[in-house]
Length: 115
Length: 244
Image 1: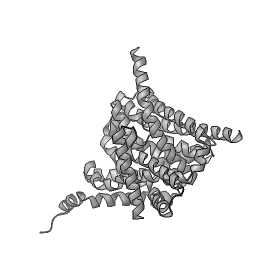
Image 2: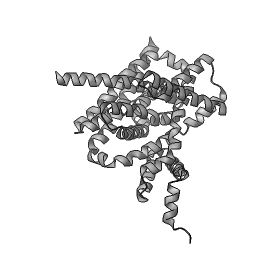
Image 3: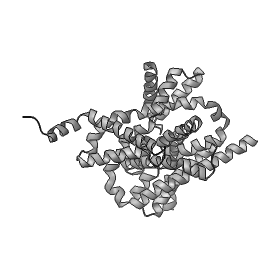
Image 4: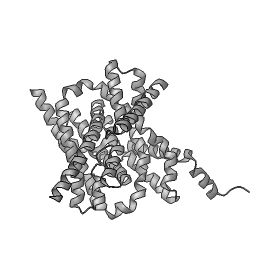
């Protein structure tokens, strides 16, 4: 367990390092995800203890967004003044993007399965 | 003489333990309500706990900085959790390989649609320039979105908030919307959720199945990359066309 906590942290740390060293426009944790994925692919299997650690971390993924979300109180005035464009964009753009990409991916997948 | 309640509160509020506990209790409460309402995604636990915490902080005149001093320990785990997304992704590696072409095309289109619709709708509804550029990268995971907004002269902290609100909207509506539009392919569902509503959507996607969750996590990561490259290019084209 502890071993794999260290693995996650080292991947993230290496990701932060690569981001700073190369100026790649990606956050350290996303690069860390790519590193861990590469590591697992090279190894050819994901150790059971790593799987249970990541599953328990990910089962409460949405909790981890709460502290940043509470930051909404910092911008109450600005959001109030621009309520229509902000709410409209958040709701309409998010849902449009979701439907369009889902539809496109399903269509392309179906086509390649038929071919 | 025993200290009065006010003094005790001021002391406790400054202790990270209080805000850490508050966050966990609020989230557990949100989760309880969500389960109580038959797992209805409208009762999104993130939204409920956010509102409860904001309400309590306002009532006790506690500022966000004091809150975050304690809550940052939870916030910190976002990094390792993002790295951990590699594991479910690895379990789906066979499927990812099979559909890499569909995935690449969808990612490019999705990133473009995400940015253009976010800024475009705000523009149509009379948003200010600062609002537009703060909204443009809102489909992308928080740290990348904040970086892009800063680069464009937006307000990164406003971006962080709209990113989270978009995530909550996506998580709340995903199952209904995908059913309405007959999107049943689990890979397509995952990609759609991950592109439109990043990590909060991904948390919801895992409840819809391992394939949906893994593709959502993958789409979240790829969309961060695609959008980070795309937005500066788009801005360059826009400023050229308005200058010419």
